Every structure is written in C-alpha cells, then in structure tokens.
Picture 1 (cartoon, rainbow, N blue to C red):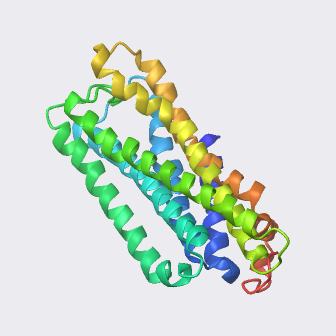
Picture 2 (tube, helix red, strand yellow):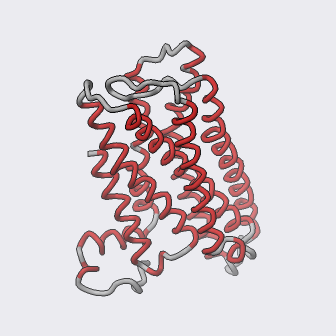
Length: 284
C-alpha cells in the first residue's frame, strides 16, 4: 500500500507540473525533481525491501545487495539536497524579491537539480562500494551495521544539510515578520509577499515532514556503532520504513496546501486531459 500510494501520488505531482503551463516555475521544477526521487523510492526501493520484509530467507548476491543500498542512499541524499535547493529558492523569493527572477531562473535551477542528482549518485555508490567493500551480504541483504568511519558520511549527507536548511528558514521567517509589519495598511506588493510567505510555509512543512520521518533512523545509525550495535534490527528496520514513508507523504502536503495542485489532481484523475487540451487552463 505504501509503495502504491507513493508511486501514484508522486506520479500525479510529476504529471501536473509537466502538463500544466501555469506550474512551469523554478520552484515547481525543484518540486518535480523531489517527486521523481520519491517516485523512484516507491517503484524501486520499497518494492525490493517489501520482498525482504515478507520473506526473511531471500538470498541476493553481494553485488545486488550493495546496488540496493547504494540506490537507497542515493535517493535519500537526492531528496535532502533538493530540499536544500528549495530552501535557497525560498530565501531569494522572500528575502531578496527584487533579484529573485534573475538569480533563480530556469538555467540556475537546472544546474542545481543536475548537481543534486550527481552528488547524490556519487555519494551513495561511493559509500557502499568503498565504505562497505569488505562487507559480505548474508541472507536477507539488510545492511545496517555502518562502520564508524562512515558516521562522518551521515554528518555530511544529513546533519549538515539539515542544519543549513534550518538556518535558512529561520532567516526567512525573520524577514517575513519584518515584511508583515512594513506592509500593514498598504496594498502595494502585499498580495505577492503573502503568496511567497504561504509557499515558503508549505515547503517548510515539507522539510518538517522529512525530518520527522528520517531523523529517528539517522540518530539510530549514528549511535548504534557507539553502543556496539545494541539496537535490534527490527527497530532499525521499522525506523527506515518510517523514513521511506516520507516519499508517500509529500503529495498529500502539496494537495492540502496548494489549491492549484488540488485542481490539477482532479483534472488528471477524472481523465479530462485525455479528451481535451487543459495545458493552458488557469488552475486557481
């Protein structure tokens, strides 16, 4: 069920952004990149690990095991780097609105997306094939015994980006408060600022959901080597499933907070786009 909801929900997001021209914005291209990563989690990572969870005696060759873990780490890192890019986009939109369109154009966003996917792929496959080169996969191919040297990898790929994002959003909300006070009693620019603040709040919630889902797992694998791997495997497995469920939740956040995504979803689900051209429709 989690896999099906993840695939279908993110497919709706991807189709909406690609099809409707109103959604062709730099911010939505970053959301599109995040949705593609979440879709691949549902289509590849979850289905593979569902088989491992249901059938405890499946044997996979060592290369297949490492490929699975590399894909898992790569997609998770892609998600967090995309969230970092989104926070940077929101920073310029709220804190430097006059230069936003020049600094966050399609070319810049495309470079950010390409860099996120490239760095994630290199880090994911590098951690597994270099960091775990002496690890032999046995039976279920469920590797959670991360060597002490790779705890540094979790700091670089998770804790550091999270700290940077939190600092950026704190700065954004501080500036947003000052803007709210400055526009009291005036209408000039108030609508635009209000829309940008709403978008920022929504995307901050997306980041909050990500942290809620993934922080317990990263805390566990950080302290597990220090406690001589005393955390039981079922607990770690439960925490990683909580992390994977984040890929399912993002489309629900967009649907709840964005009226144009709700309208786009209804049009797609009803099948109207198969009978008429709705690409230029005003969603809301």
